[in-house]
Length: 363
Ligand code: SD4
Image (cartoon, rainbow, N blue to C red; front, top):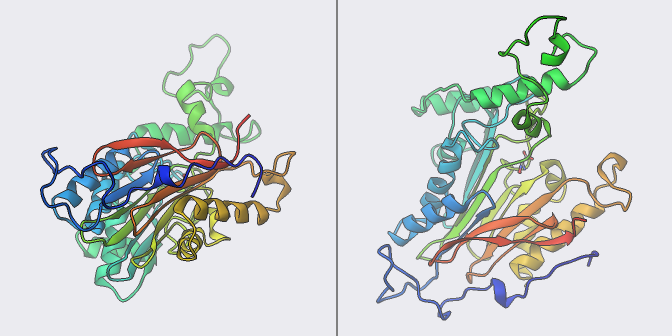
């Protein structure tokens, strides 16, 4: 095991049928006839609203698949979540390109879209690919045409906030090109042009950092079926056409009703190389707890990161990668490369934010 591993106890992250706390019904009262399976929903740190929505649907009898997609639709629709759907940060050309994948443990089917423009709910399109085609993965122009054929509305996904952040990034790229920020454009004696974005503006400066966001959400429903979804606008300022791990079945998401479900957020390039989602599930199949399974894959990520530019002086990755996992017994776990990462969980009683295990402690 790598240095600085914080292992939460197995029991701490375990919620089995028959656990002391009762499962509450939609009205908050204890269920008279508790279901055979304890439903559970896990998501990335930005998924508190998503796990609450998903659990509400599961308690009302809906499938895990319906529930997780409805959950992440909240983030996709929210312009303030600048890493997912509408309002997501664009690629280097200023265009929002979205990626998503879904997988259904009951039917063993999967669907995904990559580089999808103009449609704010790529998770719904991914589901449509799964259910209404003989394919698994559509990308770019073809994915858009498929979405339009199924009645999705074309929209401008670039919010003013995201456009300003992109423009500030572009203007700050070099002092040796033709894109001038407010300071560079200033003329002796003239009042500053209030319409231009200053790279020194606090909010835009934040967005100038290469940001990763994304939401992953996985669940078990009352029948014991599992499903998962991962949806994102990907790496901000990416080269047009770049796909991360989120839409790749086996990397950003994997679900198997016999074992469990896992998904990821963080640097997709690092995850694709270790087929993270699938490897986490296979680790659980071999008997690891969800948390152990996530940590083991993170160790592989460290071993497979050889690029000097990605490593600090102690050869630790400078980026973060984060896994979330549940197994069919209702146990859950999450781990990230770096400390101070959180995940969202709904155990049938309440939505809560919890600390993930990690390999390296931030100093
Ligand atoms: C990607 N994994 O495109 C996504 C981005 C992400 O938190 O998860 N950000 O690589």
